[in-house]
Length: 233
Image (tube, rainbow, N blue to C red):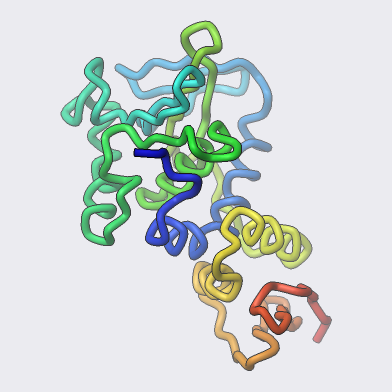
């Protein structure tokens, strides 16, 4: 059987819904944590660096650059579902079973058919992390660069991203490049994430944002996101 060339429709539907907000949160996480080298202790569930110690660390999974497969922490024989660093990720598997998202329930999803398998692994990790909340995903090379491990960080010391009208156009455009199947769903999910009400027509979605400005997203005849603008009140 050939490996899939993309994620399943069910994964894409969920991923698109959370994508823009997840990208923003991950950007903030990367900015706060910084590029410093960090030390991982999965027994204590901590990340330690020059900026201090972060707790609430869980093992999402790992990606092999040799065969381009992902391995969930709960399926890793060195850990398993009962390991303290893994137990907190089990709601991802349960969510996948409930919503038919095979990528969340298959022990070792095969990403070798993807145009960029390593990028697929990053997308899988960040999307999965949104199921259990938290503040971001951290990764590092393992096995002399033959793989990467992905950790979910849920330390309340880390900030949660707030609505940012300046960043919104970039976030939405980036999200539709990752999950291009349903552009409107991406906008809907982003607005719902921040509790924003909106009015929708065939051509546009308009929402009043916290500072009173109007966020307008327009779509072409194929339903693709054409423009994102923020107009002052």
